[in-house]
Image (cartoon, rainbow, N blue to C red; front, side):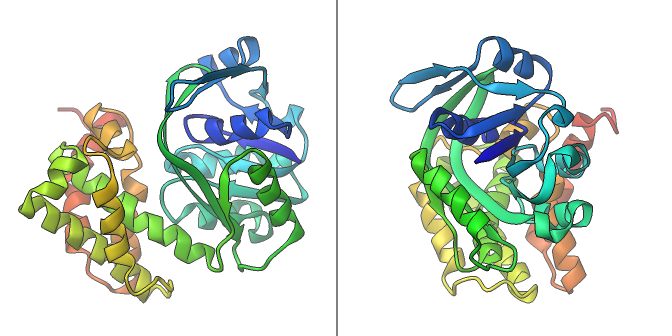
Length: 311
């Protein structure tokens, strides 16, 4: 397949790198020092066992140089999706489809409005990875897995081809019966973990071991599940319980990327995690007191990181 990776950071870079290493025709759309490193030194992927793989890749900062792709893996941050949709138009052919791997559930909506729903899949991924230096990605934990599918959940040849490409690269991949439910299932987990983690500034082992903070976390998960339900998302009856089981299985030192961004004074995905739950709950007439508190408490730091307030 001809695959473009738009935003080849810690997530897009890892999955795109694995695809490229397996022989797929992959081109990375990057910028700045990361682009320079990819073009001059190639990409380095370090696995949890310490094994490091350095290999040459194709990279550019100009999508118009690439032309239409079969598939686009979108790895930018959630707040960058709308801008990325405009910039990727030269990559869109008649049957091109975009697989967004952002945290959150609104990327397919944004992409569909910009590009047309026929060019958009739902997608979600599971991995702990970091961009440790330009051109260098470290896979720190969790078995890498990609979940994606057509928004109407129909089985299509184009989707099957990408699935086979991931399988050939040795990446665990799933095309679920309901991609919206699959996206929301992770959203319960990541939005709740991120919000509580950012407010407490504590790793997950501490949060889940203290009864008071564990209770807040459980309430946040249940609240997100309630928003999903009222919006017609068909989650399993034990969805909230399953999320807590995942949280309990995480290494004690685990933190979420949004939490780390806020703690380090960088712009984060706050608007598209706790903010999304508040926004989508309000639209559906469902109260979200826990996430409203998390969102409000974290908003000053977010606005400071974006240069909109000073203190």
